[in-house]
Length: 347
Image (cartoon, rainbow, N blue to C red):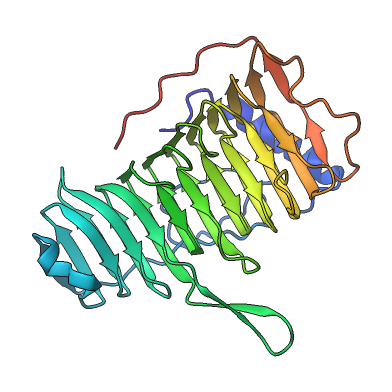
């Protein structure tokens, strides 16, 4: 589902722009170096800031299989760790209260709701249709030195080729190392929400090659209190509100080569936000509602580079009176509105 307008020439131009951004004060922009001895990642994220160090979820280790035919087979999440759940019948609810679990529904099977119990690790959802998926929030505890710690943060979860279409939000994430790949998320409000862990951030959030849709009562993809995120090669739709939002005390958030339909991006614009460094580059926006919301006082470093806005409502991509010295705003263009390409079908 790679975005069709991306060619090698754009990648070369993007690399040049990132080098220019480095000269302008961007720390560590450029191509991520590859380790020839490391196994290939589940998805090629392309150009990301070299300083990122984004971590992929660890894969589960399983040595048993449980065939799930009905709700009775998984009452209250009771099954052993290190298990592949081969789901062959529809379920009203699936509670995951074990580590090292693969959830592999048969074609056409529907699981209405999934709840992942706090503290669980190394889970893979391989295909399937779901109504909603919820990560339980961790317990936020005060420490003796006046700080905070998260007890029970869910870690290492991969969603591959799934459909989630009946929740508000469709997927609620509180965790570390979470990847959504080749998937379809749809909601009347938020399709993908990360948050509810203040002041502890969720970390290493990846969304790639996916479709996220909202009917508009909430923003489509929301990253609240997040440290390190990558959103690439995805389609993000919202007819009323912003499609992509970064808020709270977030840092190192990166969005590249996405198609946004309807609404654009809001970074640091929510009250009380304190965003460190954010990249929004080489995205394509078919603009019919709100376009950009950036708070000059709540974003330390913003790289708004090489985005194309198709709109009959604006004459410039972003038109502030002044741009902070620490921001890099360059090569954004506005073109006459044209209908977006056809959104890819559900997996």
